[in-house]
Image 1 (cartoon, rainbow, N blue to C red):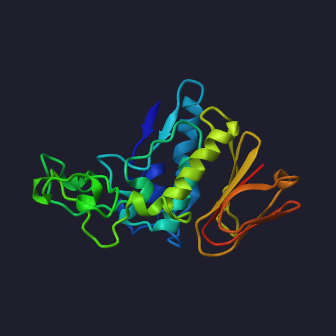
Image 2 (image 1 turned 180 degrees about the vertical axis):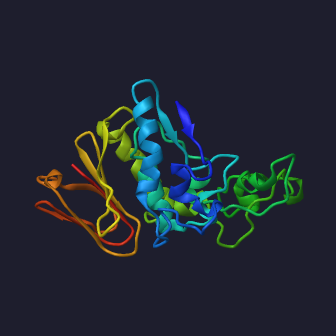
Length: 254
């Protein structure tokens, strides 16, 4: 398998880090930023078709060389990012701390890290000293922890069913539960119209839909007949062949 890395103007970049390119941030998952899922698909689909019989694409939330998602995306947006990452073909890769929305820190470079240094800070476990990472004096840490009063941490989020961590865990469990969400299951685009409809795709016999905008979106199609929602973010509804999705929502139908 190989990582689908964040390169300026590639498909992955247009989903979450379009701010790195000229012309403003039109990332697909940034709510109402004017993103277009077709920019992603034009880059991704040829790569998927060329590699699907010989290996796996690995979608990443980030890595040590990539600005953290939470630099520009908030928690509702991050939940939808993980919904896509954890339901696509191939092998997902979650960079430590992204599952709780750790922030990118603006730090001076450390041994050649340059702007990447801010994505390499210690994991934030709790509200204890140094975010529970170490009992050493703070000035002895290789890199500082996020000192903000509201810095995300595992301890608090694992007690909150509405947290980003809780949603990532539910999505991981869903991927394990449904074989059609795993690495080799078939993938196909059902709808990528950027009008008043969500992005709809198929994994095996499952139908999945994402609406990252703040506005209600609807989709009608024969593929929805007989389907029921087995997982969702938001309050989507399906009746007969019509799917209604509120703003910033996600649904898996079986």
